[in-house]
Length: 112
Length: 116
Image (cartoon, rainbow over all chains, first blue to last red; front, side):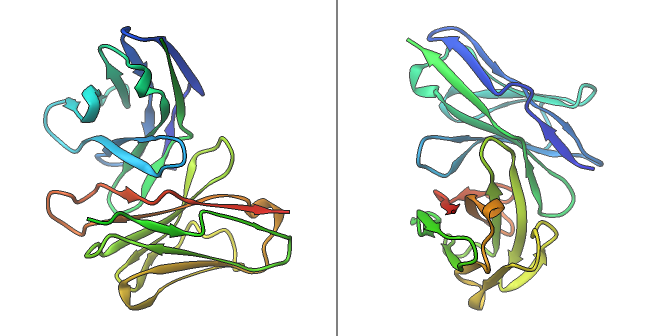
């Protein structure tokens, strides 16, 4: 069965430090991978995606993610965290058809 | 451009009552999806429309849930009769069929349903 795992419920990081939000997936075929962010009382917003090509993809707000096929991972990273990055982050995967599957979300808390 | 609009933002009903959630997708987006997130858990797929046709409704929990998309524009999701376990946030998302924006979903702010 297709699934997405975000092993951390919450990630805490100090402002200015690098951050990583982890994601692993289990799907058949070649996956399309996504990260979305949700701010309070808002819908999910698209951050970045991997379809094909370079394993390191760059997205909005200075975020980037690295596709690792052997480890079936797609971790979200940012070199220097901002307090305003505090939000709920969702990893997602889509294969074949048009169904996109989401993880349970990871809450990022950036402390000033 | 206007985003995906969902109504109501919050609905509180009693067990056994009926609730209808509405979603207005981005104009021109043929793909429309409904998802649900129960507290702290993953966002679960409910169903997918392409224009007015149901492409995939494998995520619909049971026959108390009915989704429609009139004329391929807005969509409604009706829960009748509602049960306690139906509580959660219902998200609608829309997407392009092709082009540069294909594969990316644009979400509404969600409709929070509380069943007492």
